[in-house]
Image (cartoon, rainbow, N blue to C red; front, side):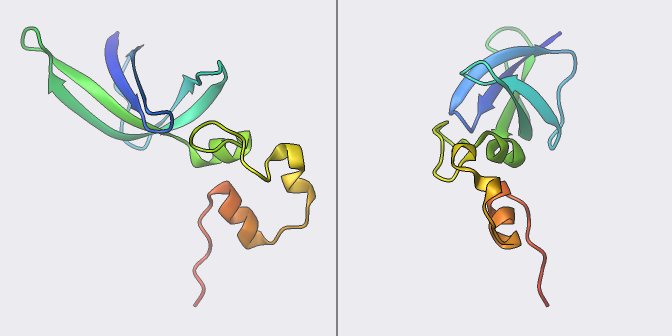
Length: 112
């Protein structure tokens, strides 16, 4: 097992977790939220630093919540519910394709 320090950009936290292998940039991992619910995170950066003891290099990860996961949960970066979340019936209203794409964090098609 490899102990990796994870720096969570979504919640501005740091924690150490054990992995069987070091995740690569762009891969998705599942982490437990502060409220105990599991969520998907994208690996933004991987780097190694020399440990304080011996000749050992420790892996570090920068992660950020997957944009679709944030939209599905109806949470903002600080974990508070945004206006227009599920409780207010976001998907029950008639919204344009551009509004839905902006809400879910999807890329909009290029117009020529």
